[in-house]
Image (cartoon, rainbow, N blue to C red; front, side, top):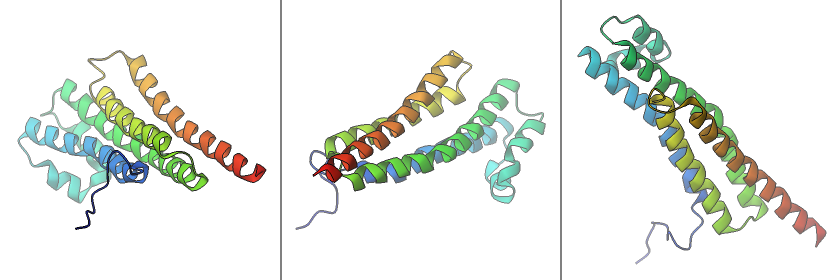
Length: 164
């Protein structure tokens, strides 16, 4: 019987991390909507569905939300935006590394590392009132460096191919 599930020890999981990174990018939006709904006792889904780009302004203008919660909701929205801005470069880096023939273990480690860093980044960003601000910058730069490392590894692999 053929299994459609990847073998975690053997298979290259790096391509699977691209949709996983999208889920990680969307998670703060769900947090923001649920937090807003809990703070206001109003269903946030109505606001998010009808005017998703205005949600931050709606939260900012709502007097029912205390400033600490408002800050977390707004930072969650900013974390989503930041994740979307970085998703393309990550997908390109994973694709470049795989197409150039970078080793499976190396690609798996770098791409899974990126997703883990983005989870941490989102958490740090949303709850930055609990974490010193430089920690967020370190998390961001770690993710960016992992993407750049995938591109550099792709370049090295391509150069090795052309020398043969």
